Length: 508
Image (cartoon, rainbow, N blue to C red; front, side, top):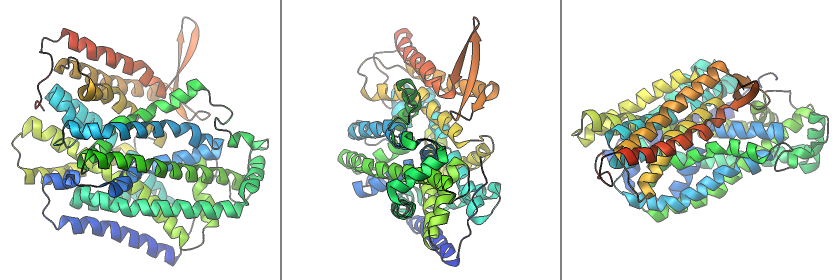
């Protein structure tokens, strides 16, 4: 759609960025000097309180995928990005605030979402849930985003930028575990908050407020820009809202959220963390949406050159921010990516070692070796994430696949294990989780292989002709097809299984 923005950094900008990198790496090294048991390394000693929980919950879930994705919708369609596309996620955050104390108290000794699945349905389902969590937690989106940042600001080839971003994110997580992760998240949270707040204020003032943005959007669209200020964007219907909103269900099974639930000092602390985090998520979405709209307006007015919609925010701030603040902005972009990447590297490393290797192959593995091996698992996760970056061409495609996988494979059997009072058998867990896992992978493979990418709707589609009538299937539709079958298979498994009323606890 346009050229990639080129922004040159001054000496002060470089200094700010280097200080940021040194600070987060220093946190990891400092924490690692203390002898860390596995509880310290993986769930931060189960002593995290609400101020730190707010910072780590918000910064972990608000990554570059959310930032650039929201900015792109703001650029193309306006405030619909905030009111309609982000709204389902706020609903899920509220649900998590309600349920998280009950989840915490369900098994205070659990360390992961997979623990809950394993103790209810046994080792087979535990492995399936761990594999689902692992693929969900691979950091493809964030390290892909860091590759773009290095390419745009440092003029480093994308591939090398991906590798460099991965290495930096790995250092403090590898050494310091969740403690270092959460402490660095506090720094990154503050940097994200300051960056977006300052950037929005300066850009809004420079554009001339509502009147200036309106005039710019009128020139950009060559028509009445009122749809940019309409909550539905002039095109969103209830069916489309449901389609776009389905992936928000992934919040309810997000492995990093469950890790923080078990790392919290109490159920009250994690509930407070979610509730206080909601206005922070909202403020981020508001700023990013407005910046996307302003980028479109600035393009229409000729202030910035036309670029790809998800890079408009970079071109806008590269034009309006003075030296020094550009450095803060770039550090804030890295903070947005790294605060998510470090968390999921740790989760996926734990999936390989704590959730699969130890219970299946080494059930008597000592705690200090568990910490050591989990560090190796973090490295393996990083390598797999790097490979996947070069397989997936688009960030949105990664998110839809990962969200669908966690929703279809884990969500129903997980919450049945937590709250369903009826019969819960190993067969039910294996059937539902296994079918969801395999069906989602097959569905995505078929859509991406035999379908096509729609630039209008920015998603993969497949046209099927049945009895002379053509139906268009979106990649997001998989949840409507697969999840009902997962629920049915769960109850079928309970009916035909010859086990007792309930799986005994401790079978993980």
